[in-house]
Image (cartoon, rainbow, N blue to C red; front, side, top):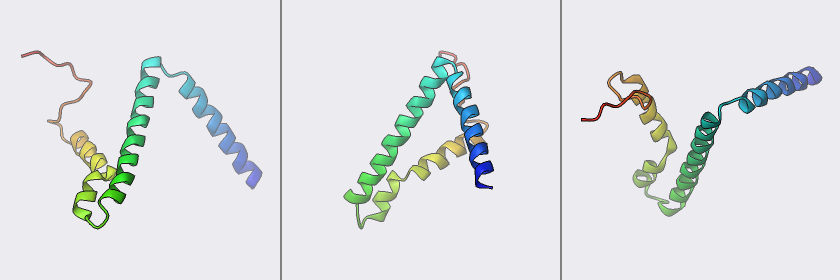
Length: 90
């Protein structure tokens, strides 16, 4: 059972790495940038926990879940601008 699970995980990892390697350079760069931003948000959240210990209302402003909820609300709102939509200069 463990051997089969390991083989499935290895195969899945190989497929994922192959797909990742085949990404266009621009897409890979965007994914890398998103990862770095997420790392920085998590670091800021950790710092805020220390800096604002005992001040939950301030510390909560640094919670990455708030950012994720905001992003999800924008996706759910059809009036929300889509960054891939062309912008017409005014």
